[in-house]
Length: 325
Image 1 (cartoon, rainbow, N blue to C red):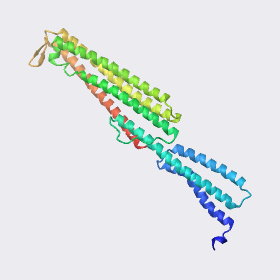
Image 2 (cartoon, rainbow, N blue to C red; image 1 turned 45 degrees about the horizontal axis):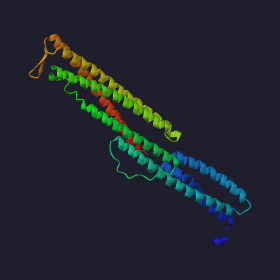
Image 3 (cartoon, one colour; image 1 turned 30 degrees about the vertical axis):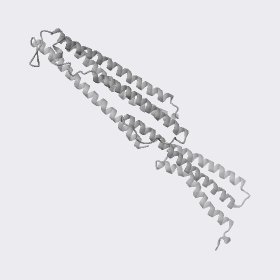
């Protein structure tokens, strides 16, 4: 049997096979791509719903318009719609890939900033969709904010480094007025820097929260970002408060040691590098103060270790989050 023997019904059925395939592929293509991590699953789902509804409406209209035409006409019309859907699906995937690449690049910049590195990757092409452009703008804003806050923290840490507390308990520092006065000045400066750090951290948290509250971004992204920022801020502020409390306690204990040493000037002497006290009672007082300072120092080291682990966990989380994009 040659093509001339094909009836209109058979031709329509054959065209319908390709039309239905095209319709199915066009509708499902973005969703399949999203499930394979090419694009956004939510956006693909919306495309699926909208295109499926649109196809049903169009087919209904075509059936009404072409009701007096041969079945083959309807079949060709369906095939045309299917081809258009396939083209739209491919465009949707291309746009999604471009959006994802732009978002990845912005996220990579944040991770590089957190790790105090420069990202060698070239700048990504602008995102295709308005929603993705908003996300990229917010991520870039977070990165700029993070860079500035990290620079401020770095400057403050350098000021802390200038306050060398390592020689405040040496015999020469505890047996001379110049040594005691020098140690007192260090303690005053140390206390000032603790206050600056507390204010800087509180301001940084407030600034970050305000940025997320006012940023132009779809609301379904804002809520989880704020929730995560609030959780991280609570942990960070809690550890910082613990550190400040133990450091302030150290200042009080050191001040007590300096008060004791000043009261013993002329009575406590340095002999062969060791402190020699006027009597057993004075020696016992010194030992009690020194033990308290040592214990506070150990607590401070433990909190600093926890703080560093917290910061490293944030970096690891950012790295892992970037890998899942």
